[in-house]
Length: 128
Image (tube, rainbow, N blue to C red):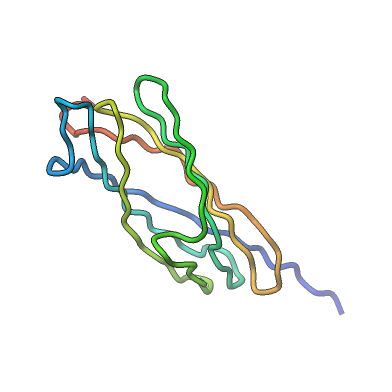
């Protein structure tokens, strides 16, 4: 009997928003919310265990963030399921960029990484 290898895969989409009420441009504080949708686009159940973010501002400063789960959750996603969450970050410049990786594991204990493509943080009128 030949056993077909299962393929784990998560895909991510991102939406960002400038948080004017949490920002103070006169003090160099710019706050942004980001909403991530994680979808299990593979054919096996898998759990998001941890995250790694690189958050860069326009001045070249990069902050590295690592941790377990996302917003207090470590969601188990079956094929076709998705998980959505919103978090936020602050920058010292009006715009910046984030990219990262989710660390995941299948039900049969195979680790894999789900890359989060780079996305821009900035006020809509400041990006054009």
